[in-house]
Image 1 (cartoon, rainbow, N blue to C red):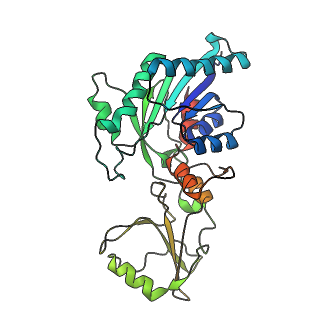
Image 2: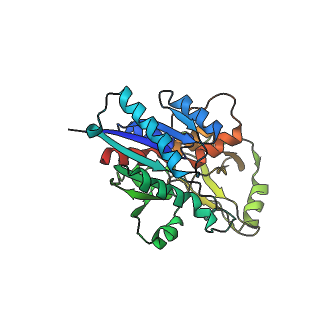
Image 3: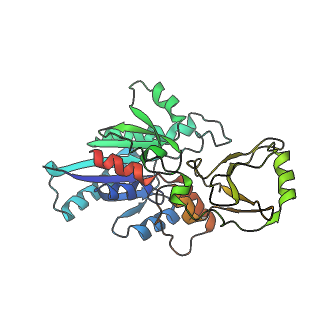
Amino acid sequence: MVKHKVLIDLFCGTGGFSHGWIQGGGGIAVSVDNWEDALKNHAFNHPDVPVLNLSLGGDLQETAETLLAYLATYCAAHGIEPEDLHFHLHGSPPCQAISTASHSRASADGYFMVQWFIDLVALMNPDSWSMENVVPVRKFLDSLPTPIPYVVANANDYGVAQKRKRVFAGEGWVLKPTNEGLTVQDVLPDLIGSTLEPAPYMAAKKRWTKLGLDKPFPTVTSCSPSQIRIVSRRRKAHEEPQSYTIDKPAHTITQVNHIVEEIDEDTEEITKRGFTLSEAATLQGWPDLQFAEGLYAKSKRVMVGNMVCPPIAKVMCESL
């Protein structure tokens, strides 16, 4: 008999993992965070999923009792008997002090929430569990007395047009790549010709030369006179910025927006703009993500940049 796959999603943010879990056929007992704006948006996209504003990282026993009460409520409401339940616990602990994109040094303090979540897993003893974090967390996981299994997943291997790499630690599931190999152009076919704010071509070319780019970037489509690149991160003066073309997967989407820069060969003008929130969400694997009213633009950008790519959660849920 197929069991009911029920998730408790901790550090859920706007609900990327929750969204993918639902797509994979699972149910959600509760999604938990202590960021009210993210929970508001989570509820806006999934009004049937309970959300809980709870400061995680405190007393383990109290936290476990609170979460198990939500699980019991869900099972009672859906008529799920204990023998028919597969309980999955997921967490995406904060990773700012661990990430290579951060200017702060990783330290024991940076891993506090990671260790807290691992301890919670041991206490709650779910049927399966997972933890998502940045790649440098491997060093911490490898240093633990009892090794914790993990994989490094590239989102592009799971139907996401982005080469975002994240560690997924845990047990009881398998991540089998779908190998779709999507590119930016596959999911954002109308990007060419959509840039704004024209600026003189020579001024732009001078700026690129200062950054170390002394020739136009390559044409990526034979059916358009435009040349286009996307800058994912600026470097110091006289250094070339990190960039990619639209026939490749995007670089990692973060709360710092990528800039689309396009040259029109006929007019020799450059136009540029950042990704819209919808475009960034599409590159994260959630093209129909909606935003509740009253949220600041910066908050929305952080929600999108920090989310777990839903297609990976979908594959994980389907593997159970």
